Length: 247
Image (cartoon, rainbow, N blue to C red):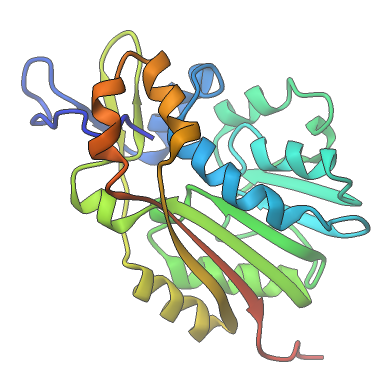
């Protein structure tokens, strides 16, 4: 995610922020994605990590897995079988350098998953939902591949943060880059998931805290932390199935 409070500038203006589509954006981001501590990822991990403590004997799909961050953590926690799917070859190339997950990586579109029905107990989709234009089609695929007691955990840049100018993106040696997104309110997300057959268990707005302050300090942006910590930064929702699986 781009640094909170990074000044917005007009795309195309000298020294401006470059706006890229999802494919090109993540191709450019991939080589540096794991290199720098990210306060939003750190915040998300603090909240979600305890939710996947009891994964022994379960199967998990890391949807839009990127460099395999959550797949790696799930295997460390004892997941029985885990698969990571992403449409970005560049991100998967980075993920494949991690020996613990390289055998479980698949390049595929989340709108057309190459898996049998009802084969996963847990699905995680981290910071990707806003990149998916056809949410209904994505949800149909999710419902197809998760089992009757399946659980779905999603996280994304909070819609309030988006409204205040925060964007999915990064800064490399050449420029600041924002990646195309389709932000939705928490209500829209919960409503869409419910219509697909998923009951919302929790929907939390997460704020940056003291553990993330250290990341701001190391990035020489300590003066930005107080203002950034007043904005809901990450939205995390948990869902379970509320309809029976058809025979």
